[in-house]
Image (cartoon, rainbow, N blue to C red; front, side, top):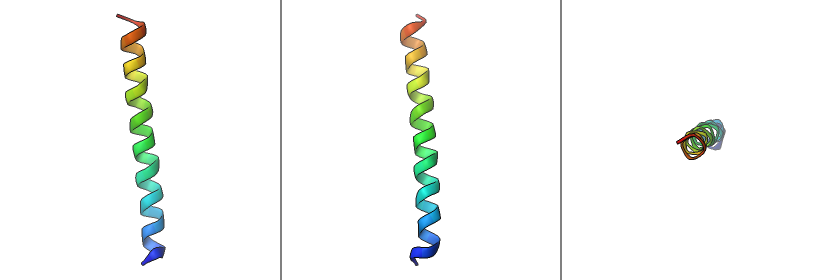
Length: 34
């Protein structure tokens, strides 16, 4: 069970980190460019 679970968790982690980076980028652009 740990074999298929490991890549799924890493994929979810990468996907969530990308979403957080994009949200931070959008927020930063909104703050810098009113």
